[in-house]
Length: 309
Image (cartoon, rainbow, N blue to C red; front, side):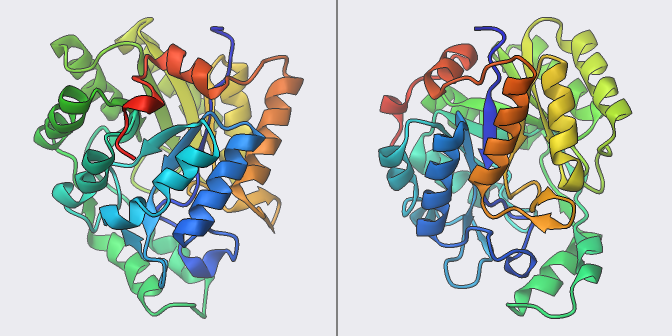
């Protein structure tokens, strides 16, 4: 089973705004529907954010999460992975409210504070569906996503220790791998470690083949044989670098949080379309995709019967 590829699908995120694609799921029903379809297409893990159903603005409200989490659990057996990153506009307490309420099997965890620049996307559009969108993007020019050592340790304590949640460790640069290795040595991170190489966000490492090789070599040096890695490349490099990651023996992440595209200047019609494309590539490379239960076994997850939704 070590050759099985775990496909993660990140359905909506907090980066893209409603103007950018009519296919971005916004309402709880849309998020549930697209997530279930992505699982049916082959995603073993579903990485989830929430949005205000009226405006599409990112929200950390647990009540909104609870409008789609039970529907997804009833509709498929995929591992549900709730964000603790949320958005840079949210406090740590806001970001942890939904994961604590849900007590999910898995959560994402950004391994450091960083500049998180979305403002270049502002130039691509002249008309907006909602008034909040351009200001939201512009604000990232002078905003830091905050996850200090103390913040990370709070997440370990409030989710890992209390509820047995395990983590998708999101590493946006090699320094984040240093932090992850430190906590592995300290015993606060339990193996197997699931590392997500996040590439292509302005403020982090760029989405280039050479950088993926660098991230993998650094993880090998710092983490030894204690980790499994996955590749998340933002924008147009999503499928090329995911393919490269699969060739290197890794896992992959796709979804409309990370890229709105399915081909050159062609918007993806759904999350499932991206999952289907990367699944076909993986299988043509001679590898097999992992089922949700196989992903649970590989990552030592507590099981869907131990969540609170």
